[in-house]
Image (cartoon, rainbow, N blue to C red; front, side, top):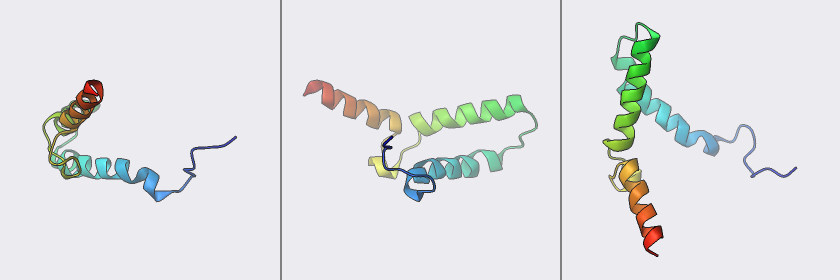
Length: 79
């Protein structure tokens, strides 16, 4: 069976998720006192919402992921 060409251990496959986890740990986890699972869930949920809807990303021309997604989708629909 042929795979997509991304084998186990390929560093480029994981680079995006590794950057996400690094940002999450530095911007949320290390700054909070996570005393229980309920608080951890709230912190994770709030940070992921912030990350996708408010935090600008340099790789997206300083747009949020939400804005970049909808701008690209609207361009495709208009074509």
